[in-house]
Image (cartoon, rainbow, N blue to C red; front, side, top):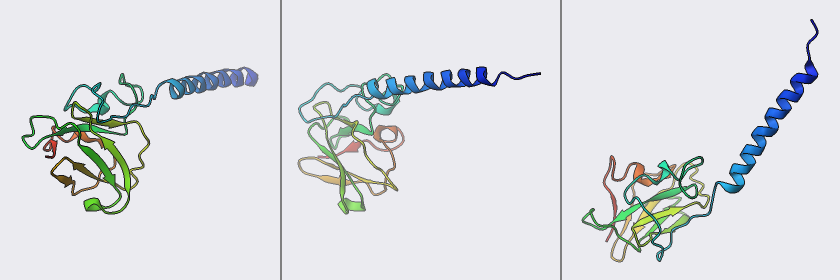
Length: 156
């Protein structure tokens, strides 16, 4: 029985081109730049895990690399205008790898590339207090833990 090698080759080549074009389309249209600013008030779902929607294939605008919500010291009211920084060393040491502004709704988010490497150390800064997270993180889904299994992110 003679095998049709040419037919198989065309079949696999066609599938490969189909997959490549699908990936190319997603890469060009899917990830939109979306970065919080102090003045912005377009964010939503305060306190929720932003990465449930803002990921590749998700329904959110842009694929976030870090996102979350900041509260005041009562941990019930959001704290707009704070700043979140990611450091290469604990307690604000090392290099600043990312600075993210907290918007008017208390949310922060960025689609900018962040190299978490072996871990980064977050800080949150309000008008009167700068707090440091004692452990490092290797992903930026902050509300995945904060407000779910650990205390809200807060400052004053």
